[in-house]
Length: 404
Ligand SMILES: *Cc1c(COP(=O)(O)O)cnc(C)c1O
Image (cartoon, rainbow, N blue to C red; front, top):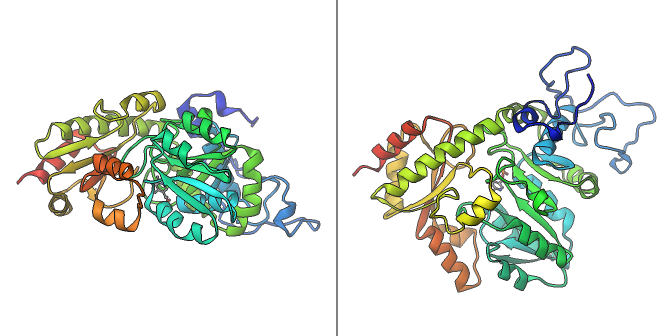
């Protein structure tokens, strides 16, 4: 079969066909799951990854590259409109590889002050221990980013919408600020997904995804990815990723590859369901505040409309007594699972207590940062990841769980 350029095809065609090829030996139509850790080598094969020519220059050892993982990477790159993609064992493995590759002792990085908790915690502790300076700012506030710049700033790292507040960052503006200062912009686009936003087209240098969420979509495989240009990702693969070793299992790559076939279809339903449920929650007397980028009440609705082609499926909301309601949800919900994570076909809900999170994960330096947290989260928020069940069933489940 001749190789087709899927970049110009429709989203659903990309999701199904890009990156995949039939097995040359059996002509099997579905991609092969190749679990082999090693491959028969030529007598003159190189033993060091330093000499690896291209990622798919024959297969040597699965930590360096693997045909199933490669098909996943190719599909992700086409879906994101990126030159290339690098898959990892988890979103955190991708983030760690990016930080360790780009930053060295004496460098400075600006990181979203509210972001995925493990990234926040790592940049509070481990990364500064390596002699890398970190400033946490609310990256929705472009002036705050500019003020935090230093001559040694190498990286600006944003998450939009950010976990768990669903606050947005203007990617194009942040990219301009980064590039004027000679820094890279990395965007964790896990919540938005490529169905909503293509950060590389808006000027970002790197996109991060936790494949564990919407891209895999079924809650049964951890994975992560970095996407961007070959020029920067090739050395990242050779010098950092392969040596750190946080490689995705071919089995997980295969599961995620299979999940991706329905990715654009799933995102349409996630968004439709979330819009319905967000409006329902907004009209419920016990709900104090609902945050969803697709609601006109979102403080950055204009930016959401400009930057997100799909508002995705995550809703945050506040109630009067969060802890009590959390208990009620965990005991009474019948369809929605009371559990962490997001982006699965199953709906998931979890309560995030502000006091606890501000102790363990998010460290604010200014009153302005604290005020922004309070405006979005108050004493705590529920993060509802709206799944693919029928919206009416989800609403009925919430309704009975919210009763006195
Ligand atoms: C889940 C998540 C991560 C981490 O991904 P893992 O696959 O759990 O390691 C990173 N960023 C965001 C926004 C996430 O939601």
